[in-house]
Picture 1 (cartoon, rainbow, N blue to C red):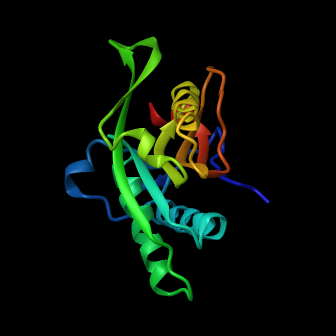
Picture 2 (cartoon, one colour):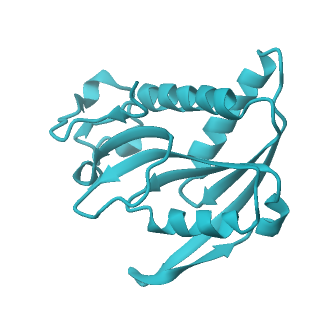
Length: 186
């Protein structure tokens, strides 16, 4: 069973006329590569997978800002709907962090966690890290090592986009949204 939806390397996208494109974007777009409905459907599927894998236990959902905010909000909306329509509701706490590992487009080879409660407060908790895009995964691996020192009960990472580029990918998660070539976002 596939854990993500693969967008073909040579994906040409769809004609704009097939979609409701906001007027202020009309002159900036040529085609739609990933339709909004597909993004919403994959997000709902990920929410269902999270409930399946982590359900029945209190979850601390940790949003990696700034880019992950919209995906985080949509994912939590789907989890909330599932909670309302299931026999057993999953308690959920949210927190936000920023990860700083670059300075002027250069890697610093260290990760600074900004914001959120102290990571030590995650001891014994089920932690769901929500990220929008992870390229190589070096920063995420470092965050996971920092979290491991705090002894959480369980840690899962969900990310929406896997960007394949010339860079080596150091980190894959069990919960992935879409996989596509980096040039589709250029």
